[in-house]
Figure: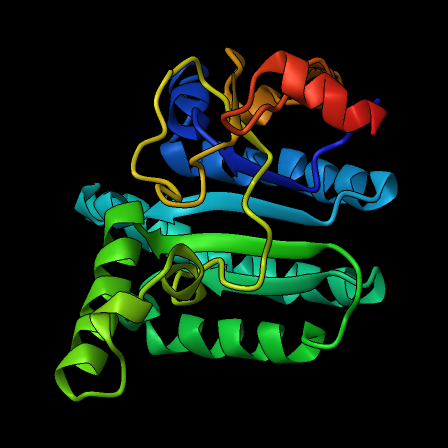
Length: 242
């Protein structure tokens, strides 16, 4: 089986899973930690280089205050519980997004987790919190505009690679496989630049129901794709034979 180097996942359906069981939405978010652990374990076991999880979008700040507060507390608790095992397994964790909007307490936990695992050579785990794809692109555009304005950069020198260096996923290969659970068929402002040539896989089960069989189905889907990057199928076959 041909495996992706980098898998990106929108973990959708926690709230609907809880509502269907008459539980508060927070119960769904807690239940969603199990498939997170499974995906980290399986990506590590299979030698997949990177995993990026969309945990909280820039738009999610508009959700009910109680839910947002509960999610932030869950992030802190999960970091406290999981970081030792992640470190032991060689995972390098990194958070992407506008962390200035996060509480000082959560920012401190994030910084400590990143520092603890910085030198690890295993799975590169990115967790998107307070992240939006448009925010990511605008942030880079503003920075490059400032450099052009002060003369440290010429507009003609702005290439795709220069632009990409300023994005939140700088240093990580673009995702090869995107997975979204919960039955929705959209990318919802996630990694807009980086998903340009990503294979898109949409799964109907809600995130707490996403199990090993579902992950294997997504990987099988990817393995069956011919990734042409603008070339024809014949050109890809010629390249493979060369």
